[in-house]
Every structure is written in C-alpha cells, then in structure tokens.
Amino acid sequence: MPIKIPAELPAYDVLTREGVMVMDEDQAARQDIRPLRIGLLNLMPKKIQTENQFARLIGATPLQIEMHLIRMSEHQTRNTAAEHMESFYRPFAEVEAAGEKFDGLVITGAPIEHLDFDEVTYWDELTRVFDWTQSHVQSTFGVCWGGMAMINYFHGVQKHLLPEKAFGCFRHRNMAPASPLLRGFSDDCVIPVSRWTEMRREEIAEVPGLHILLDSDAVGPCLVEDPRHRALYIFNHLEYDSDTLKQEYDRDVANGTPVAVPSNYYPDDDPACPPQNRWRSHAHLLYGNWINEIYQSTPFDVDAIGR
Image (cartoon, rainbow, N blue to C red; front, side, top):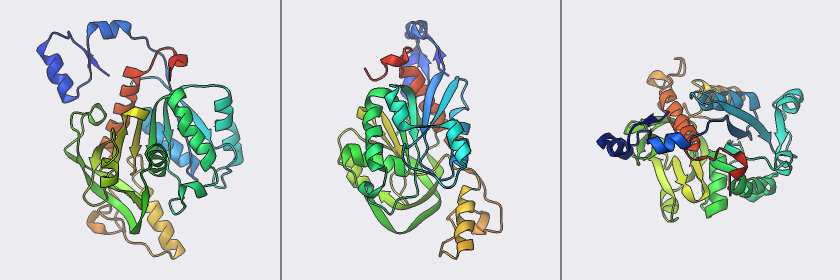
C-alpha cells in the first residue's frame, strides 16, 4: 500500500525515484475504494492447481480482490472434473457478450509450445481475447506461453524452439530497479523455468516501446513490459509451487521420457532431496506490485476502463 506524504517533502522525490509507493494529499483525496476485478483465463490442463497458484499471489495484498475464472469457449479439458468447470468457470464468449470489464487479467501458459500459434485450436478466439483486453481490461499479464502468444500477436516477436528443454531454477538480473513493478526486488533473483521455446533478447529489443525488466544469461528474457498495450509478459514461472518442477520431473521419469534433472533446484542437484523454494518472496513482490499498479491507475467506475 502507498504511503501518503506531502509532495513538497524531499522524501517524496527520493522515494518516487527509488520506486517506493507514495501519494500526495490530492491523490489520496481523489481515491475511492472498491474490490478489484481480476480475471484468470486458465489455459492449463490442471485447472485447480493453477487456480491455487495464482490466487495465492493475487490474494496476498491488503486489497479486496474478486477473482473470476474464465475458459476458452469451445475447448474442453480432460484433466479437471466437468462439475468443477461448470460450477466455477465461464466461457469467454459469455463474458464478452455481457460487456464485462476487469481491472486485471492473467492469461496462463499452455502445454502447446510445439505448435505454431495458428495451429492452436482456439487461436482465433484467443486473439479475440487479446483485442478485447484493449477496451475491457486495465492491465493484462501473459504468463509463459500466454505471454509468448501476446507478444507475438501484438508485435510479431517469434518464439524459437530450443535444442533441449530449459528446465530448473535460473538466476535473473534486475534490469530496471526503479520500475514500480520490481519494487523490492534484489539485483538478481532465482526463477523457475520449464519450456521448450524462447523469446530472443535482440528481437524484443528491436520493438519500440517494449522494456525487458528481468533477463538471464542462461535462459534469456523473462519479464517484458508493454505500456502501449497495458500488458506484462513473463516467460517463466514465479507462480510455481515448491514441488511443481519435481512433479514434472517425476512424471517424465515414470513415463520413461528422457529428462535431465532440473538445474539448481534440488540441493546438490540430488532428486532424492526435497527441493528448496528460492523464488517465493519475489513471486509475491511481483504480483503484489502488479496489483498495486492496477489499484493506482484503474478508474473507480469499472465501466470507464478502456475509454
């Protein structure tokens, strides 16, 4: 939450430059408070696990949040009970037809990296979602494949297949310490990675207006800000639970799929040891900062979003 101090106080400029949340008396007086409407467009097969991961992060601020679960209209999941989907999810077509607006929207990853974007069965509807966010969502957060799809649709940045899976926990550099989205971040941090594709630094850098906020020598760009489209793209998985990479590794081992031990994940890289979570604090920082930026910028009148 922001600290309210006089704009004339020297600390106001100092803290603002450092990325600390501050507001002056006039800003505070204009603020109205209402629950923030955050949508989760869940493209992952394990819906409940993904819901838990994002709800844990989005709900960890003092603000009141309403989380709305959304699915693609025609795509059916085989990994989550039909009763759960019927009870808690609404198809995007229904949300679109109702003209609903959201303060924030998270678009998750999906295990379809091997496909070209236009080969995805729900690609046409997903591009409709991307266009809809520009008039109905204050800020959109694309995660892993969701972020790759958004940056490709809006800017033509291509995803590239890797010769082997990027799998494990990798150090990332803080490229924009003054960004309000990285408030409280260390100069570097550890982030879980699990993907067969990459977005290339030089191709992102060629696009005017895109800003790489977190980057890694080992696995490339991680977090990209797109102010023009009021969007963030993260290609890795700060939302992961402590054992998510372990579940993936154990699944592949059980299936006989050739897989390397996830890098820098188990103590001494020994899968017999319980993995250690070294990213939890930065996960809460990032999503908390995102929620705060929405809170600071979104209109009190939800209908005014996108105008």
